[in-house]
Length: 219
Image 1 (cartoon, rainbow, N blue to C red):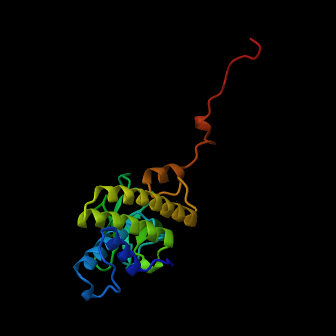
Image 2: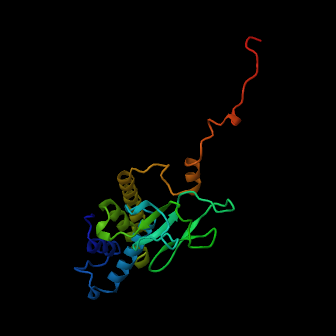
Image 3: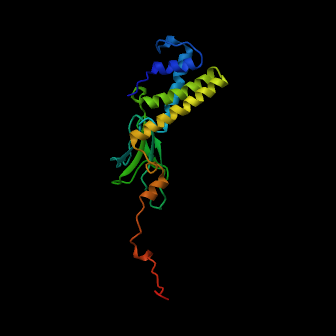
């Protein structure tokens, strides 16, 4: 749970553009407050879509009785990361479809029906409320939103330079916090190419691949 309240985040954005602080986020607080909230939401979406707010995880599941791979209701993005091929040997790739009941779409075969009994691993990015994000990530989101708001409302070059430096610092801290929390490494990615490499069958004990040296020892 983060310690930065949404009101405080909006006030920091207003302050960056030289505007007055507000006591609440009701409709009577003004047009500028509404713009700031909108830009804060967009910056939050950007961070969440990158999976940097503790909202990315892998889920193993099998198709339901209708052959569909149904997905959570708070979904933002989903991608098939396990390696599968169709009857023609072509690698299956996926996309997200369905509103409000989201499901995984087989782009390769253009169908929503998946092979019965097969276990699929799906990388899921779901939406997280502002209050549930960690404080370092909240601060990174605010720094990005502050810079964007100041550029749109005031456009001061010197202030943008200052806010740009702050943004880099807090973004680095936010990513570091996410890496530490998730114990991430370069091998834990959703890249399908890497997944095929890591899951390939070893051929180290295949006799047909051995090469024997036939030279004489000692001349």
